[in-house]
Image 1 (tube, rainbow, N blue to C red):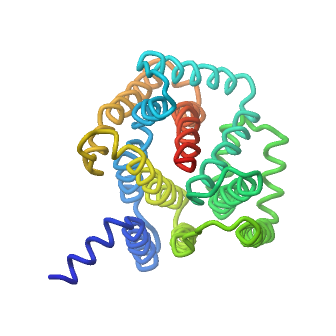
Image 2: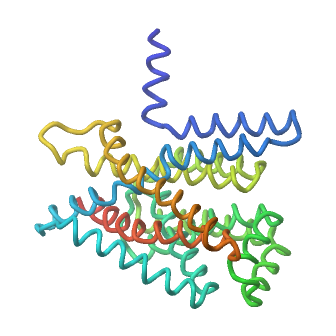
Length: 319
């Protein structure tokens, strides 16, 4: 019983082990059967997306309120919502005008955000900022370049066959092995050098778990590879950071379950918005390719979240 209790406490403290277990099970299933049914892939993706992926972004209003209070500023939910919607509207307009440039911007911001989450508790110095960006870019490049047959048609549809974007992508695919190895080795060397020059407490065991999650994704289809990283790693890590940031905002510290429950209203709103979006497309816009529209919709939700998370991470380092 004591062994089971210790195991459970270890899993609660490090939920990424569940992600590794899930990824190992999926890889084993695929190895035995030769393929994974689409129903299984979409079920795992949906479970991770709506179980932790969207909920970790549905706490942005609480993060923004806590950041404002810590800085001695007032918080207005109306103003928060207005900023959120204005950011989405502006970015959406840019997407329709220059889709290829908007995609590049989204990838660059995502690379930074992934690196900021994967390398926790490091100071916002120029050197560590570069390390985070390079490391996050490697994660994104690894997932995409290791699944070229699935990414290429998606990229063609999102960019409307943009010549420059596709030529760069095809060059990267043609040299994917060298690109990934050089990028990975450069990330490790840069991390080691900056750790030596500006030492901080790096959780190397945590980075090993990240490598395992990425390695499992290499053997899986793109949908599962990205779901394992985004939901089973990035969102879980972000949620743990959010929990530490918000837990003392009340006289009685909040539990992870209580904080997760507070995400449900906006998670439900995101789900309803997605359903409404699908209904609108089916009724009025079937002549438009739904994939670019869906990608734009998801990126519009993501961009304001990245800004708020960056503010929280910067504040958490200072505190």
